[in-house]
Each structure stands twice: as structure tokens, then as C-alpha cells.
Length: 305
Image 1 (cartoon, rainbow, N blue to C red):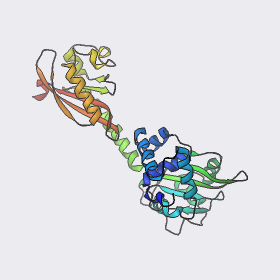
Image 2 (cartoon, rainbow, N blue to C red):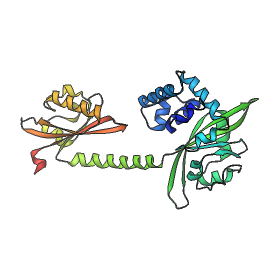
Image 3 (cartoon, one colour):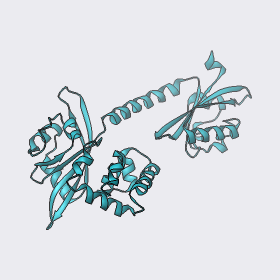
């Protein structure tokens, strides 16, 4: 496996490392912001490269080989920071990503006691982190600022490594920079709030459907046009809303297609008075290309003026 391990991608190694900490595939998927199906695909690829071994055996082989002197080469190019510490706080190994995250020079990690520097940067005592990780794998959310003042958000997973006579020999910290994800999430939250406001005051007829084809929201303009109260529309399956979304067969097919392929589309809907109206469907993806919800926007003649 020592030779085969070189062909593993960074993401495959990360999956193995998280699995070695006892995380389930569901937890790994959540940690890496991927779907469980994608994690399953990684396991299939690793078995094709390393052999048809059970999950636990793959992890065991990975840990055995990554613990050899060659492990440094395996971790050098990882996109996540890998930091191995003695219980005393002395750094045994740190890949270049660790220095990048904490604004450290190449010679400021290995062999150095990082307790004061770590606490100054993150506000967490390194001794507390090491103590908790020595008992069981754990997770921390870190926020600190770089020298130039920019905020950094890091998700850190810590786990014990190599017990001898009941004593932990070292602790492994896996550091993932989630700054971009945090900023994007905040932006999307702001966009959702803005969209909700615009939806309520818009002359367009706006609704949102989930993956089960249930209408989750309907704005005031839509409710006025169809002449129904909110409780008779929101929370109802699309197939039972034929009077609202016409023709309902075309609506169902178009929304399902948008959920499946994640592509925007347009259909010609009919208003309750029978007049045609163009409807735009906007998938709202959350994992890869898989959409969780679809927003429909029907442009009425009044809104087009």
C-alpha cells in the first residue's frame, strides 16, 4: 500500500483521516460539505486503488503507513493543516498549511513549544485542546485574525495518536480553513433575507417548492391572484394545487427536472383566468449539483408593464 497510497487524492486521504477519528460517513460528509453519495464514491475509488478491503481495514492500513517516516511526504501537499503535537505542547510535525494558517515562518513550528502562540492567536489554551483530544476525538471552531487584520475561520478536529501503557503519545490536529464558506454562508443568509422582502412586495407571483414537490412559500401577489389563503397553499403537495399552478402536470415535470439537473428553466403557465404567463424556475443547490428547493417566478402582464 505504500506505493498505492501515493495515488490517493488529497480528498481521499482526508476522508480516511476523518474516518480514523471515528466519524461516520454522514459526519464526514457534513464536515467536508459534501453529500453522502460523494463520500461513498470516494470509498469506491479507494478500494479500486488499494484493494477490496472493508472500511475499517482501509483505515487501519492508512494509519499504519501514514505513521511511517514517509508520512511527512504524504501530508506536505494537503489542502488542510496537519499538526502533530506531544502532550507537552512540543510540535512533532506540521505541514506547510499550518504555518500558512497561523502566519508562521518555516522554522517556527517543528520542535517549538506552541502553547503561548496558539492561545494568543485563537483564544484557546493548547493544553486544554490536547487534554480533551487525549480522552477522545473532538472538534473546535476557531476564529482569529491575521497580522493584516483579516478574520480567519478554522474548523479543527483533534484526536489521540499512539497509546502506550494507557498514555497518549501524541495528538493530531486537522485544521480546515472554512473562511470562504463562512463568508459565503453569511452572504447567502443576507440574500435570503433580501429575497424574502422583495418576494413579499413584488408584483410577480413567487413560490418555493421542496424536493418532495410541496409548496413551502407563496407570496402575497400569488395568493391574491389565485384567491386562496396562505394555509390552503403553503405546506400542500403540488399535485393538490391544480387550481393554483396550471397546468399542474407540466409544473410537476419541470420542477422535478430542475431538482434533478440543477438547471434553470422556463415554462408557460396559465393564470386562474386562463391567460398565459411565463414562469421561470430557479433551482437552489446546496450540495454539489443537487438542488434542495426550486423557486418559481411567474411574470404577470401587470408586472411586465
